[in-house]
Length: 259
Image 1 (tube, rainbow, N blue to C red):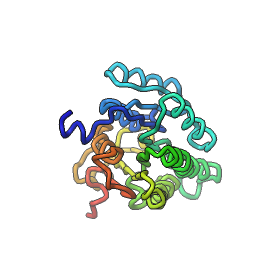
Image 2: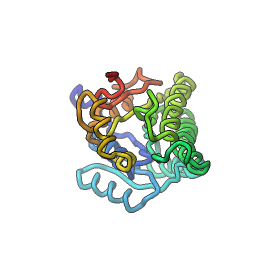
Image 3: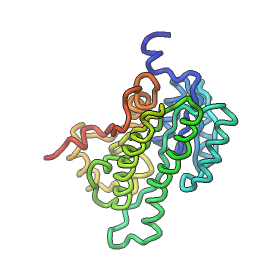
Image 4: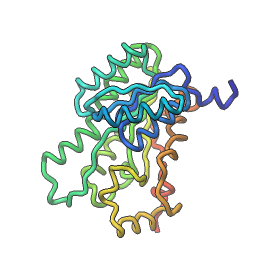
């Protein structure tokens, strides 16, 4: 094994990708499989999950699907128990399930606000509790990667509840990272910019796209595979061994732009 292979190889490791049935986390799952991990694609949709598993297998990777309701701690615990039973271990977890909404501020109803906060923040919290405890109790340690957003850095217009939830995800990441730091578990936050995924297509009007491009030095959207470098770094036991409690923005320079 070469130096670079050793630095970034996930051979013999098991990675759970909650939200792996979506576009961005699905691509992250595929990348982890290419790096050698057995990937558990977890989400609500068995159809989309199995499609991703089959695509990974066709590319020579190892993957399986597991159903999970990310808004239920009980469901996440069942997922963790199943992975440990089937695979014997958990080395890495991505918490990427979430929902978005472009409802005008004064029109946001309680049930919508509660659903977004519980999905994006609550689901991440439950998973950190469940998988963090498993990693610590196993003695193997591991790494957790929470999915934030450019809105974790500064608010973004038109997605009020989503922005609040993602800012909270970053704060949660930092607090949990501090709690787990001496117990062999690292926790970081990957914050994507604007990618062509389900979450943002519905709010990308022509004017919105123009605003985004004006604020993005690279003048383009990101491609899903461009998340992989940061994902592998932050999750890997060797390459990212001294990185915890950090937010890494993959956004084409969006958060560095002023005027």
